Picture 1 (tube, rainbow, N blue to C red):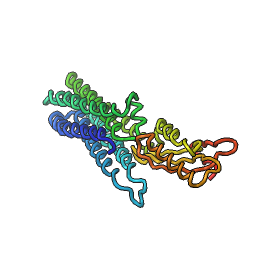
Picture 2: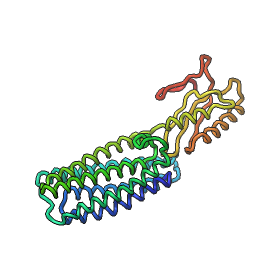
Picture 3: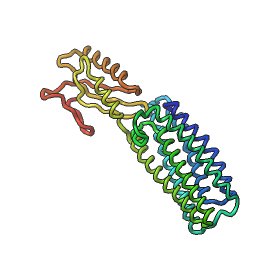
Picture 4: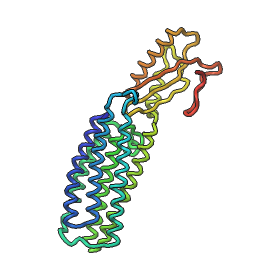
Length: 318
């Protein structure tokens, strides 16, 4: 995994959700609360998801092979996409089914009244600490960027996934507490079903958002604008007059492919061009903390000026 911070947040969430899952299942067996069962399955799904993130981080470290010559960095996106599917099906859809079932046949909580309330309150406290850990780790890398923008822009899947899961878990616990409390107050089991249904809708929304973000990363995203600007600025130097066009692609959260066609000085010798390219590569690597795979193609600027092509079109010359 790319960062110790991401790993720390994942492990903190795994420990919290594992303990909560066991506690919630015991509470469900004692009370038969629909919200309690939905929360228990939610915690199981979250704990499984954290294991998947850890496995994905480990497998991404495999050495490049003849078949996967750029390495396995994008494996982390595959596992994060699987996380969104599990959260949608095992978490969200199960909670919605349980809500429908309980609403069709409502029954009050008749025994161990204090158990679900105590478990949910304890869960809120534990999830708050887990979310606090994730937020603190995110603060180290997001700077002044808002959490939502950080989740949308991040090229690393672990922290955004954990942030969304922890926020969803915390809100879900509050919804579950509302459903259970109203059931205890009114004696109407339909409130319990409403709590379970609210949890289901919440998880489906979060899972759908995660799936969209991870799908984009699997298809392939460019480097962040600030990294692209830094790289493009670093290219120009002695022997290279401008960038004709440039493309970037994340091979993993911290590894980027840079391919650019650059304009060299007219009449420069092959040795001078080779030296300019080597020097540009050094400048590029110093311009960003990312690990870079760089391919620079020298060309000549056209008489009417350097031609800059938009993404999706081919550069002039060859």
